[in-house]
Length: 66
Image (cartoon, rainbow, N blue to C red; front, top):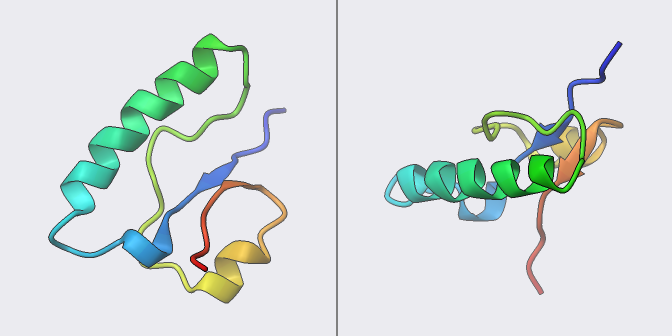
């Protein structure tokens, strides 16, 4: 059974760039799959708290600033 991995970029998840983030993720996800990575999510999560996100054992990718 495949684990549902999680992808989210919460620090840049602003309404004015959300469409761009989703488009960027679709391209990145396709490239990750083409390199053989299983379980890559089709969509980014939006609106999840950073604590909840970074505590998720299924987190594939996120970011932090600084």
